[in-house]
Image 1 (tube, rainbow, N blue to C red):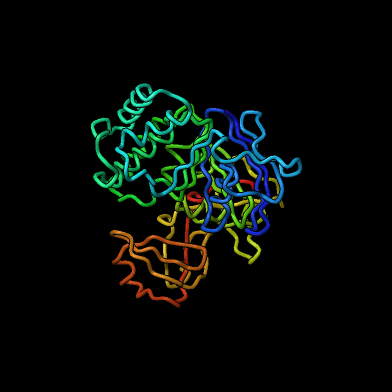
Image 2: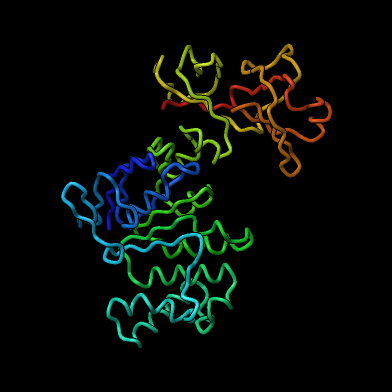
Length: 347
């Protein structure tokens, strides 16, 4: 089923329009407060927009102008959040059977379907356990099975792995990748792995509006928004192409490799890895063309490296380099990166 969503919630400062093709998964990315959960709430019927429409496979679920607002239980949507919210008095099997039973299936058929779904998500041997007897990862798998057992036309996932230990996230991610295949789904996440492994396309929200969208791999390898660049772990400089370099409004000029080269004067971005940035105390002879005087704003330990933050730019250096350069917050330094390490492309 395809989803078409176009709405405005002025009280939350959100105005969004997006579509999800039938059988595909869309990842919604963006900082906290950007409108991601609001979009899911509107799609699920839990949030009433001030204007707009929601259509699922041609069926109008919300049309503010026409006074149409289909209630959540009649939308054929399944919403799964950070907490599994299983019925505590029911076994895992009975939790999953609840969906088919609510749509008219017999007790025997519902239990048979529930057992199949539990097996599909990898907890087929835990059907007799109550939620209190399940680990966090097990409970979330049961919640996934319960959501899908009701045969929803649209699956909505609001950071389903955020409350889980890092050790159990990979297994659930693989489970979701398997069960969401060929289903229409929207997943809210802050994890680039979720976007790459679960989603076909990505939409980036900032301040309640869509600022970037495209294929998952494309957005994360060639980001055009500050949030997507941070998520991908890249430095991003936005400006206009001037004489082969991206020139930012503050005068910063970044040379790089472009394929194809954007038109002169057109909006463009330059991206490069923090690991490709060298840090010096001053500009020295033979420095790359991309040498920027900056001021250290933060030093962040990262395993065997240290990320040197200088406002919106970042460099990853060794602990030994930090000691040798005597780096500290407030110190003026120079960031340098070879043009061959910089990708330049149009907005």
